[in-house]
Image 1 (cartoon, rainbow, N blue to C red):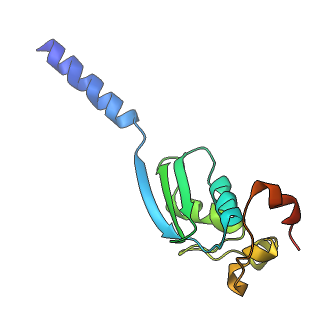
Image 2 (image 1 turned 180 degrees about the vertical axis):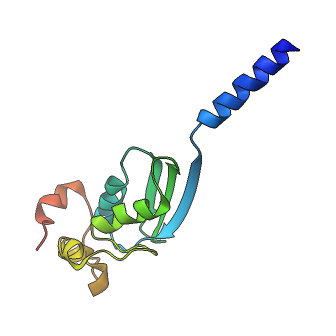
Length: 124
């Protein structure tokens, strides 16, 4: 009986210490491969397990630890680099720092997003 109680106690302790994980999917405005790189880099922070943005669907998929970050904080990370999300609009200043081809509000999308092109993709 003692062993059963000890095992149950250990299981409850381990379960309470484990961090809860969640996955979310949300819209993020962007137009090209450079946008994809920027968005995914913004989400490369402690607490985020996996993040990817699809240029065709304009959706970000993020797996994260709920004790480390909230959904709102994740949206804010993306907005901070100039991309509107379904919850938070990027500031005009952050948006202005995007390269011209990445300016989705103005119909951008003429760039390839290749790393070799990045020198030519400085904010205007």
